[in-house]
Length: 139
Image (tube, rainbow, N blue to C red; front, side, top):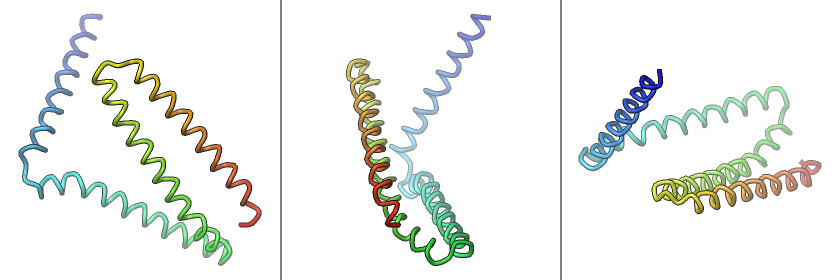
């Protein structure tokens, strides 16, 4: 059984390497418009679906809560976008640093990045919660 697992692991590792090489070759050699369609269209569809979600959400709030609910959403929505942008900023930056550390085999730096990232996210979450709690009555 152990030999079967090792063979399976080797096979998956080989397939993963082949896929990564194929993706690398495509990025280096494919036509820019082909790459654009492959990489950008899924992101565009995702943003479109999110826009539909927000629109439908506004319809439901407008129908059942009324103008005060729509006013509250109008105030909070930009804050939600800012929160998402900060989370993306931290997530993408951390992913880049983590992948470099993992690739270099630098476990000490990897631990520091993970620890700092956790502390930063906890501090930001707490600050958003405190600000939200403080201004909740005004909304």
